[in-house]
Figure 1: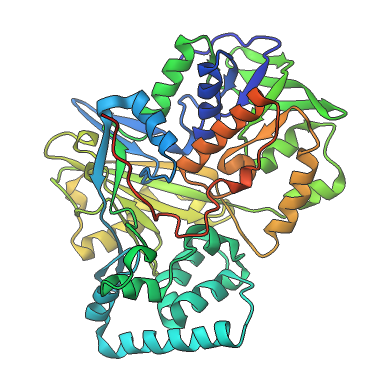
Figure 2 (figure 1 turned 90 degrees about the vertical axis):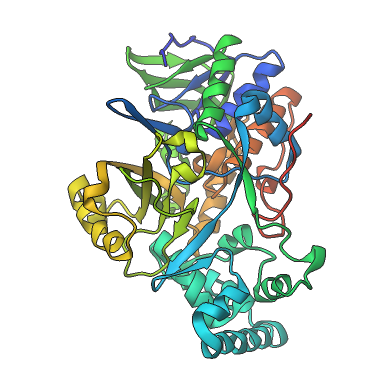
Length: 487
C-alpha cells in the first residue's frame, strides 16, 4: 500500500488501521466525511490481517490465529456483505480441546465427557458441581475471582479440567488473581446445568442456542474485510498512510492539539480536529506531551499485556485434522492453540497442501520470547510427531512472528487502574479511544467493528456513547443466531 503525504490539519485523524479504526473511517466516509488514517504496519487489519506466504509457485494464506465472525448485530453482517459479496461464506465449525491424547468438544459436550472420562470421574464432576452450587448459591460465597466464577458454575473438577488450566496458560497468572470480568465477558450464562440440559434436549430456548455451530468467513482470509475497507476509503478520498506511527501527541487544556507522525519520509506534524485512536492505551499515554499526572502513569504501569508468538508451518500433506482450531489446555504442553486455515476456506492453501498455525502465550520477559524459529520448531515437534499430526519430512517451510500487546491482562487490580486512566483520557474533548488495545478490553473483531461504528456516530452526532456496552450482553459470548445473507 502506498504512503501518501499526510495533510497538515486533518479534520479527523484515526490512529490504527485495525477493525475499530477502519470501521470508524468507513462509516464517516459513507456520510461524506473524509479522514486520515495512520497505520504502523505495512498492511491494514491489525490482529485480523491475513498474511500471504509465497513459496515458488505455491501461495499460502493465513490469519494471525483463528478469526471466525459471529455477532448479534445484523448491521455488521450487512456491513461486511456489502464489502465482500460472494466472498462472504458460511463455514461449519469444529472446535475441540486435546487432553491426554483425546479430543473433547469445546464448549463442553456433557455426553462426550462422560464417555471419555468414565463414570467415576464424571460422577466426581457432578458431585463437585452440586457442592459448588451449595457453597456459592445457598451459602452465598462471593465470586471475587475468575476461579470463583468457573468453580461456582462448573464445579472444581470440570473447572480444573477444562478452564482453569487453559486460562492460566493464556494469562500467565493464577486464576485466583484473574478478575471475574474475564468469565462474565466470555462465558456468562454458560454453566454445567445448561450444558447438561442441552445434551438431553431439555434446554429449549433457554440453553446455549447455537454455540456458533457455523460462522461466516471470507474466501481469502479475514483480512479481506479490511483490505476492502481500505480500498473503498482510498477511492473516496480518505488518506491511509502505512509504515507510519505516532511518536508524540501534544495537548493543551482539554484538547489534543498536535500529533507527530513518523512516516517513511520523516516525521510530520499534523493538527487534527478530532483523534480516534486504537494504539495500546499504555503506549498512548507515553506519547502525551506534557505527560499524564503521576497517578495516571502509576496506573498505566500496573496494567499488563500478554504477548503472542506464532509458528506457521506449510505442509506437504492433504490435511492434519478436520478442526478449525484446537485448544491445548495442559500446562506441560508449551503451545495453547492451533488452527488449520484450509478448514476455514480451501482457498487458503494450494491443492494437496495444508498449513498449521501454532500459538504461544508469553510475557516479553519470558525465555520463550527470545527463542529463534529453529528453537521453537524443535520445542513443538516431539508433540506433533507423537500424536501423529505430521512429521518433519512433511514440513515445507516454517515462519515465526511475534506480537506484543495482544491480550489485556484482567488481573485482580486492572479495573481500578483502568478507571484512573479512563477518567483522565475522557477529559480530552476531541479524543475517542477504541478497540481492544485502545480500551484495554478483550474484544472479538465484531465488537471492535461495532466500537468503530459507534465512534463515527459520536463524531457525526456530537454526542457521547458508552463504549463499554459493546459486547457486554449477559450471556455466553458465542451464543446467538447466524444471520442469513440478504437476497
